[in-house]
Length: 145
Image (tube, rainbow, N blue to C red; front, side, top):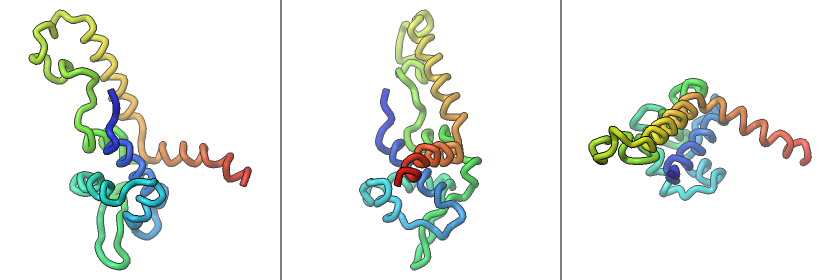
């Protein structure tokens, strides 16, 4: 099971916005440049986040993107759900009818436990957590510069 670039890049874009929280709106091209993501692709990734109300987009010379909530109030589980849909290691978890053995399959039980662990991890992490982790990772680099 792999997360798509939509989820990975979308999370990085939101982290970028969270790191600039409280400043002027952030231009999408600035995020694309800092995160090394195609502007065209990033436009498509941002759209569902705007529709869901996580990001506000303002047009014009002073326009750009801003989070609509505090970074501590945006859970990674919500972001991944919007960009990926349900994360499931196998189809039979979300759709037991897809497998005639679903009721008696012991490996399905393991895959269900795995999904619960993934969901719990994603639900326990906020954008604020990511901001703080990023700052800790960058601190040694800044000290050596």
